[in-house]
Amino acid sequence: MSQSSTQSTLQAYAPTILSLVRIVAGLIFLAHGTQKLFGFPALAPDREIPVFGLMWFGGILEAFGGLLIVIGLFTRPVAFILSGQMAVAYFMFHAPKSFFPALNGGDAAILYCFLFLYFVFAGPGSISVDAARKR
Image (cartoon, rainbow, N blue to C red; front, side):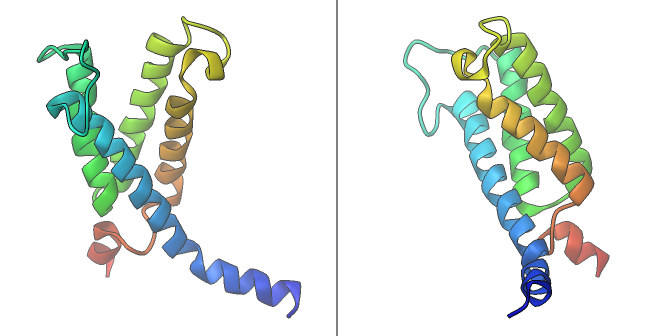
C-alpha cells in the first residue's frame, strides 16, 4: 500500500474521528458542569457553589455548552464561547498560582481552550445535528 493510498484512506475517516473527539470532549466537559451545578458525579465536600456566582455561571456554560457540543448543535458558536470561557478560567484561576500549567492545575483548561477553538474552525464532523441539518 502506497503512502498516498494510506493517506487517502485515513483522510476518509477524518470527519468521523472529528465527531468522536467532539463527543468525548463534550461529555467530559458536561460532567464538569453537572459537578458544579448538581454535585454529580461528585463535588468536594468542602466546596459549595453559590447560585449566580462565577462558578455557577461556569457550570451552566459547561453543562449546557457540553451538551450542545456532544450532540453537535450550533457547534461553531458554542465552541467559540467555551474556548473563551476556558481562556478566562485559566487566567483568572490557574495562572495566578504559577507560571507552569502542571503546577497551577490549568493544563485541562488550556487543552479545552484550544480544542474548542479547533472546533470553531473544523466544525462538528459528520456525526452531528449540524451535519444532519445541512443535508
